[in-house]
Image (cartoon, rainbow, N blue to C red; front, side):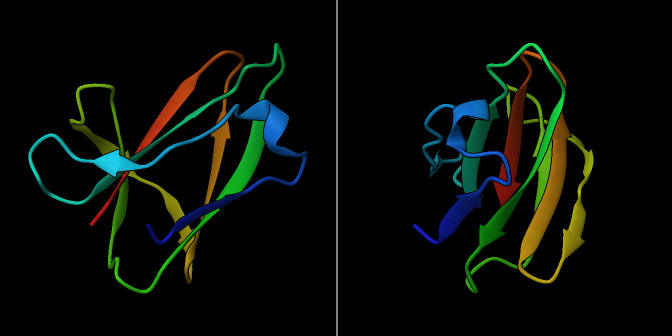
Amino acid sequence: TDVLPTYPGGPTASGAPAPKAAQDGRGVILRLCNITSEPVWGEVQFGEGYRSVERVNLNEEPLGPVEREGDRVRLSAKPNEIVTLRFT
């Protein structure tokens, strides 16, 4: 896929993210997990084929927009939080 996560602190804060098709067929879902006991932040870079990205819950229901700059999304995660993004 065209979703490429980047991590300022290294990939250990997120484990191994793996994109998947959305359950409703609309876009790609990417789940990131902060496996540390501290809040973390990072960026996800995505390819040209996507025009929007939003934060969703584990049921893939919208939670709201994310901070986007060009082809990058900046996000934060609380300790042990799973962050789910939908790219369309």
